[in-house]
Length: 116
Image (cartoon, rainbow, N blue to C red; front, top):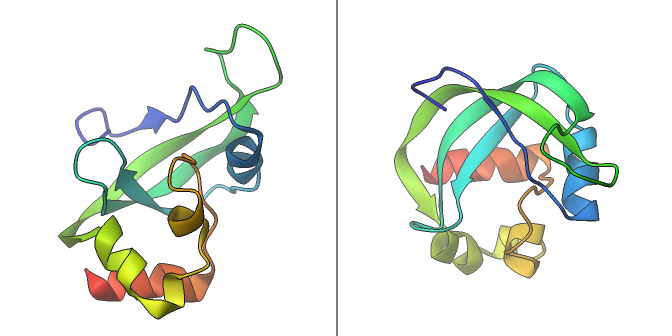
């Protein structure tokens, strides 16, 4: 995403994650999370195009958004760090870590940035 300056978040095939994508608005800031290797929040991006039909979907009613990088986090915030903090015990990243798109409150978003 950094090299291209923008990316489409395609391939989301979970109804909860799709609905989270659809709730995003242009200008919203999002946390970028590596789910395969590091399992950590590594950066901040912003929504530059609101939800639209996912061109990679062969069937079904799936959506994508376009994101642009804002900046990497100085210190990535690992999933273990998040799980260890009481304020995060009920967030979907802890309860449903395989979900690819999560909603956070403003307070949760700020707390993750504070940890970075």
